[in-house]
Amino acid sequence: MFSWPTNYDACYTISGFISREGIGLHSGEKTKVKISPYEKEGYYISFSDKPCEIFKLTQDLIGSTMLCTAVKLGGRNLYTIEHLLSALAGCGLNYIHIEVDGREIPLLDGSAIQWVKAFEKVGIKKVPIPDNFFQEIKTPIILNKGGSVIALTPSEKTTIISTISFPYKAIGNQTFVIDLNPKCFVEKIAPARTFGFKDQFQELSELGLIKGGSLDNALVCDGDKWVNPPLRFDNEPIRHKILDLIGDLALVGLPKAQILVYKGSHSLNSLLASTLKN
Ligand SMILES: [Zn+2]
Image (cartoon, rainbow, N blue to C red; front, side):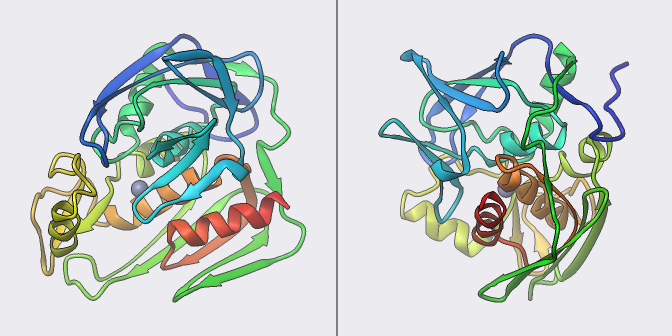
């Protein structure tokens, strides 16, 4: 039986290659991804029609769109990379090559658990710790954007305390605290699916923006109830917010900090990532 490490004292890559295919959230088209171990530290991407052109993912290449995190690679955009990056960083995996056949990373079930399950199947092996595996935090950092706030204080480990507050009864106020390590990430965060709202879902569908969005890859909230229960956790939405934060910090390294987040968002997360990079 495979078991994940209970700390980030070592770094790992996967022991073999995995592949997954599924629908892209935006295009609604089928897209395929093959992930293999790579000889250099970091996360590398290539497209299957140009296998020799390999890009190292860096924070500078990240652009946030309204609906997902995209990355610009040699003139083309690759969409919806955040949950795969969260799976990799949360599990403490690095030295990774991702080959994409399509324009998006498949959304799968809207969480990170299917990537994790695929990694478990091939197993993991130890690699040297990369330079930016962690971000050492020397002084407190506070950032805010709109009504959202994120505050970091230096710590020996990565602890996330995250809160959301929605005027919908089905979600309401939720807070989750986690001392992050691969095992906790896999058990408590990776299965949490993305969530959206019924009216917004209809609006975006009519605009043709989420052709691949369905009740199979997102929890949909309709005021005081969920359109597609059951939930995997009572507080699945706040856990997914933490999943997104980990994905958004994957390229700069997880901060050794106590991280307090109030109403977190991709744009606030990427502001933090850019701040940490500098
Ligand atoms: Zn997400």
